[in-house]
Each structure stands twice: as structure tokens, then as C-alpha cells.
Amino acid sequence: MRVTFLRICCSVFTAAAIAGQCVSAVTPLSAAAVSSAGIQRIDDYGAASDAARQTGAMLLVSVEPQSGEKGDAAGSRLEQPDVQERFAASGTPWVLCRLGLADAAALVGDPSLVEMRGGPGLFVVDHAHAPWHGRIVSILPRTPGKYYRFAPEHIDALASLPPASLTQRSMVMAVRIHPERPCSTQGSCDPGLCAEAETHSAHQARIRRQGHHGWDVRSQRIGGAAAEVCAESWEHQDLLDSCVDCVASWRQSSGHWRAVSGRHASYGYDIRRGTNSIWYATGIFR
Image (cartoon, rainbow, N blue to C red; front, side, top):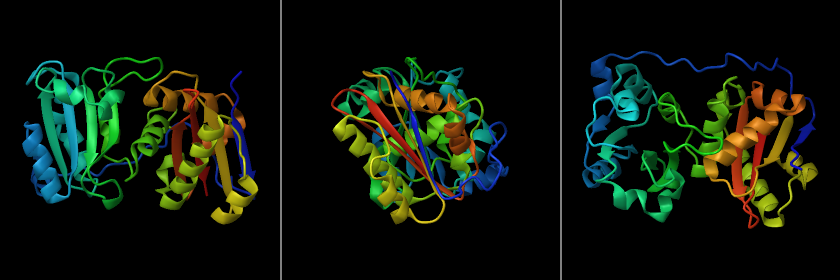
């Protein structure tokens, strides 16, 4: 039987938890502003990668069933001015690259993209932030899984995900695409809290047991009013299925959901897989 755990230190819920309409506003920009913000479109993976490295940009690659198909769900979404405005408003340069699946077969078959589920999808390589330079930090498979189902509007969320690792950003993505729009990720993504979430998720994965082990020490190290939620996935799931699964499990508990949907000054999320093929998620809020 799968269970989830919640631990609170001090009084964290000083503001009302809102579980319905917490969505960040995006300021519209003109077409000229989009261009000047550093968004480039290069439909050659090698050239796009070189451009992203040279300009310190985020590289977003859309691998589509057919090359250049105008009506493709992902490609046409990327062409929308309002979506490009979201990327322009992110404050980070972007290089956008659209490829057909036939041309990207070697890419999709690479072990680093196993989360693409062997088919079309999108992935992001970070060339803008030193801790993750050259690493894949987001993957959105278009092949349906057990829990994660791609929707074109999920592309919009890629523009505002915080600088973080693949597992951390995947957890934040799972929170943000939940139908009730929980608010916990609308504060500041705190590197210190992300590191604590990473360490605790890795600990749970290592001992293959979910829980708030060491919370008394951890909460003192974090300082101030803090809360932590933990969850575990079902076994033999991939990353995004497990992230969505863990968020759904938190939704089943009013206490957990107050933490996940509440407004916090800062937050950190992460998830790690144990040798038992179960993923262990942690969310920490302050």
C-alpha cells in the first residue's frame, strides 16, 4: 500500500492556500521585442546546439512525427506569437529547433533521452546556467504514458521553469500542469531547498523507504517556518509518470495539498529512483 507523508515545522500556513487559479501572468511583447530578446529558430540540431552554446541560451528541440508539418501540435504551438512571448519574457535567450522524427532517430535513441519513450517529444538543453551547462533539463514525451499525457499547452510551462536539474524541473512541471493549478511553485525556487529535496529524495531512494527521516535536523538547517511533503510512485514507471503520480497522491490528502497548493516565499522539489524501481519525491517549502 502506498502512503504519503507530510511534516510541518513552526507555522507555515500563514497565507490562505489557493488550489484553483494561481497562474503567473506573462506580459505581452511586440514581435520586435521577441526578436531582440534573443529567440532564434534554427532547424538543424548541430547548428542550433552551436548557437545555444555560443550565446549562453536554452536549447528547445521539438522532435515531430513529420518534418516541417504545419499542423503539428507541438510545432504549431511554438509558432504562436503569444507562446514566443512567453519565452521572450523568461529573461533567458532561447534557441528553438524543430526536427522530424526520421532525422532525429539517433537523438531519440540515445540513452540520455530514454524519457522520450522512443518517439516524438520535446527536450531542453541548458547552455545558460553554469550548474547544468550542456545537460538535458526537461523532457516532454508525446507518446502517452500511464499518467503523463502530453498536451501542446505544456510547452508554455517550459518557458518559466526555474534553472534546475531534469528531476527538479520535472517535479515543478508536474505541479504546474495539475488541473487545479497549485500555487507552491509561484514563489522563488530556492537552490538550498532544492538541494535539501535532492538529498532527502536520494536518501529515501537509497534505503527504499518513504518518510521524513532526519526532519528535525533538516528543518533546523533550513530555518524559519518550513514544511515538507514526501511521496512515492508505483514501481516500474518513468520519470514524468512518477512525478505526475506523486502530485496526484498529494492531492488525496488535505494536509499535503495545503502545502503543495499554498503560497510560499520559496520552495524546492526533487525526485529520485531507488533500486526497487520506485521513485521518491520530496517538496520543501519555507
